[in-house]
Length: 245
Image: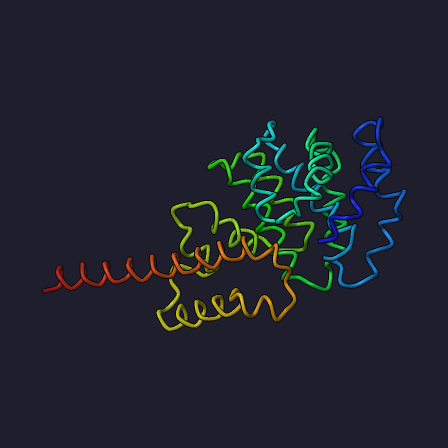
């Protein structure tokens, strides 16, 4: 991502209130115009929107924790020379959640032709939210609303969520399938998901490197979910054979 120009953006807004500061970053640089310039995920507009949205998500439960900020920096691999500027923007945004829907909307417009990247952004946000080991209900609602703005349906949201939050039904939710799916259909679905999330395919499709940490975690969750279902079904068959013998 283009971290370099953030130093200029942040430098323009010293002494202003949070809301005026973030508004000034957008208006002073004319960032809304960047939506028409591909690739969208390499624009300053996208960088600032994602940084702001991640910070506001961390604040959704009332307290933005250092572990969440570290998770953000791990996912997006901020260059050392730009860390100070990005942290300042992050600190400004994390003061409250006000306006998060507008920033989610900016990302949705910037990536309107790249649905895979929209899902990747949501995965990164879940990665940050789960960094403290707890998904607060307010964070859950925040992320669900972001998914709606991104145009992801309920099942897509739950599929991503299940990769990070382990509910009892999560193995099937991770694969976005019904528990009564046949073994053959399960095999096809599993292979499709692995193919879609394979690092080589992501690279070939131009998915930025900074998104791949969350994607790797999702692929690991897909593998774990598939293995869990196979073990569950094998145990059920053995139990049935013992009872029927």
